[in-house]
Image 1 (tube, helix red, strand yellow):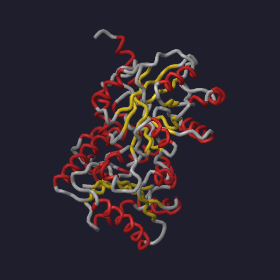
Image 2: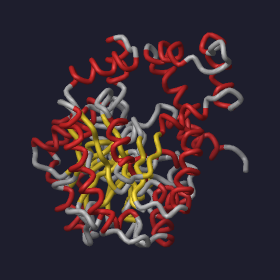
Image 3: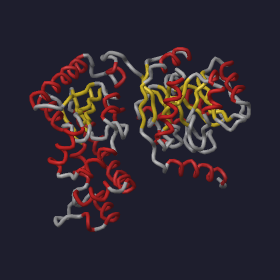
Length: 433
């Protein structure tokens, strides 16, 4: 079975394309429909919504008043996050059941239609990603008419999603919907033909990565920054890190504990085909520098330049994490003075909540012609895979650096709650067993 992730910008016509794919032979799962199922009267998510926002979001029939709830979450990002925390787990549970049903029925092509496919990381469950897009003026008019949205509601909902350019960049196939229905059908048909070719070259026994080999330009999904309980601010077992990385569809991960390397060795012993040995070393300047492809522990406390030399002495790669983060970064003057010590720059860190700081890292790397990477900086299991780079397969450290030069950055910022997990880990270590 080949799984096609179908998404698009708000009002672009994703559902219309999904229905066309269904007519042409796909089995289709629409997560909007699943979201409606999980809030039916009698379901626990609806009761949690009632408890959170009161009777004002419940209609006369006892069901959810979607318009009333939308007015609340559109105006309040925290309310929207709270709603997602209620709805998403229930939808994912139902989605998994439907996926199992599709596999049991020997489905050839499954279309998974998800409005926030890329924003939630569900693309990792897919073999191909199709994005439907149209100019924003066209989308605004369609959405406001079809969904009875105000212009303010459209702008707020649209701003909560990735931009059309970002979605296009992360797509395998793009369907344009800026004209007539006939033109849309022609664009969708071209995408469908590519899907059928991929499915035809994909025997049932193949997994997700094997399916990608039927398409031009195989890429690996790599998360270059994460922690285990060998870091003082993490409580995660290396075995659980490996399992979570597999679930997230990652092809390689770098385990990079703070000033420790044993967690990386433990993870690699479990999954030698998955794990890159790394260490996040604190320098005497108070900065962090990650070594990748290491064989030995590097003690903290050396200067930035000394740590870089120790990494390279092992044949490793120097990876600069979160270079301009408010709390853990530095200034451009210092980093430029040691630029010869940097092999790859982390331009997306999922724990950096100010997007401008990640963008600053990207601009700095581009200005100096440095390869780029991304990482979740995960200290808890749900974070793993939220920052990743898609790049050509590599065997050696040298191959990795060459691949990173054309890497495709993918990331969704983790919620601020993740820092509570790190704080709790520090506290827990001080408590009696």
